[in-house]
Length: 316
Image (cartoon, rainbow, N blue to C red; front, side, top):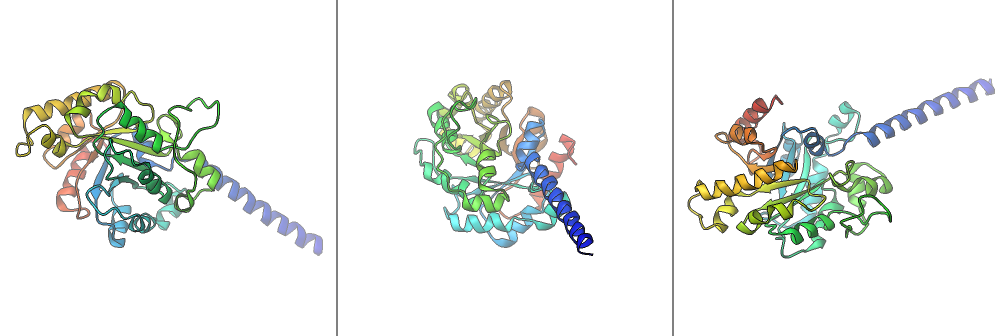
């Protein structure tokens, strides 16, 4: 009787051990950053800028048809505690259970207030340690500023690593990120590297081009390894070019196209803001990291833009 009971327990134990091993293997193999997964497949991605860090907005965005949300801490409050709550509020247990892995449907990326010339690395550290899957850096003007952004976004690599350069500067203390990503500390550190420099990296480093210097230096900027996407900011680009009241000036569009052309040559995803009247054109031009709206959640205009974008890209 005791032998039978013992064997039964052994069988149960082996079952759960094998289940845990399979589950762990699945989560080790699956891409946690869905936006990177789509971009690596050459597909367009759709997102939104959001400064509303309420619980209800987090839940709404987590179950939307968006691919990413740009949490705006440049023009919104620089408050890391509300960021922590917002990220945790985007956790959708039902989705995790249905998918059978830890990949979130909507990727949270933080836009920081720091301009390229300011190089405040501690802000990047805060955003990533809390659990963000990427950082957007505004007003990058040259190669040095882009290099600083990439270095701030990654951990120092092992000696002799093929992707050692550019050397990472991030300090190691990802307590909240480990909890949010659902990994062990060692697995997190291994996977929290910049893509595509590390093909398996889960961190997306987004560089914003918003002034003439950035446009003129775009070739040098995109030569920096570890840049995941370039995002053109048409509004600030227009202001810095001297057209605050004429966003449709031909000179602005010419600058936008210059950035797009350079990035397409190197297969670097390019982003831009869009609306119902521009989404189809921008996707046909080759933009693959586009926003379809701003604050206010999924407004009718945002929903229309997203629907048109998915239709033209075949991602309905």
